[in-house]
Length: 89
Image (spheres, helix red, strand yellow):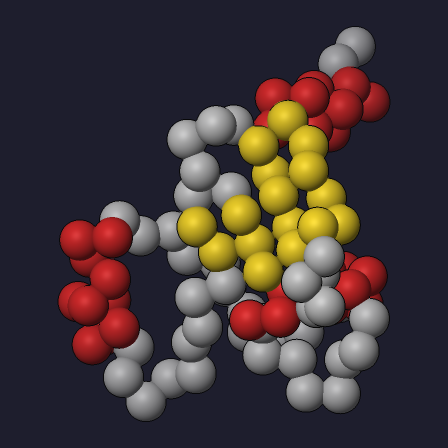
């Protein structure tokens, strides 16, 4: 997945870490196919939405910061293993 933090609605937020880890109410991440984009946008008419990323086939998580510089580029399988490691007993 490639995520662009500059595309996030972020009034008053000027730091990448704050944007990534804030827990604002009523935010959802939705993944849809390119074919369903127009239909999804029509369903969301009148609701603030923003496309902030794209799913990649290469198995990497890439995050570009608010200034456009790459701040994260990691293998998704390695991230999942680290996330699960404390519970793997």
